[in-house]
Image 1 (cartoon, rainbow, N blue to C red):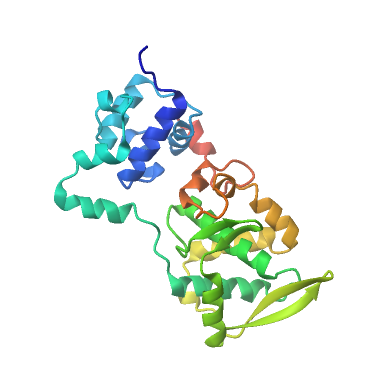
Image 2: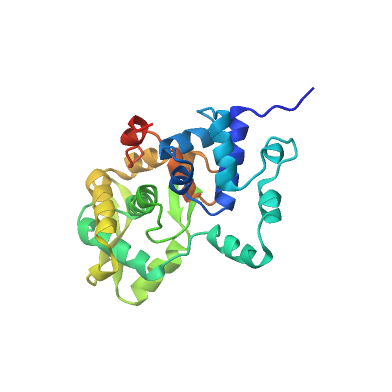
Length: 268
């Protein structure tokens, strides 16, 4: 019986090749002249690929169609065969994990606190979710990292890695103050800013993305914002306790997606 790729397997292989090449979905869309939303749908296995598109993808990503459709295809080994030795290190760097920008993260946290610390509902749970949606929404919008911090999937939603260490550093530096309160008969940990945010560290696009999250979610209860985060594709597609991949934002659907693909779909 001959081996035949499913639509889903084609999408998975193309996504693996794209990431190994260090390309964003938008980069690949420009290279082969189709819409970004089409790349997303193909990688999700929700859209088929005709022969001409597959040939263009082969040219754009530099793979052999014969090898691509073979049963033993492996993206990592395949691309390594086609990369010159002196370029392998550069490729590895481009597909590495996002680099955490400590100063930027602290300024984003101070910015959120400057806007929300006075709200009685904004304890640790809400604060962590505001940080998460700021980071992941910005990545979906611009394919660039806001702070580069990693998040883990924990029972109450996504939590920034090493957040306790960062918060303690900021407390020691007298940038923030930790207070313990009772809110709706439950213990609550809150943070108050002790210094002004350095707005020179935030671009206009970054402030706009954060402001949108604050406007949308900062009045939500801890339970409401946690439940909402539990339905976001990056959290849904991640195993308990594991790091959440930023790339999963491109598989979001309404109401979580913050990037409009309508014009792209119309232009096809």
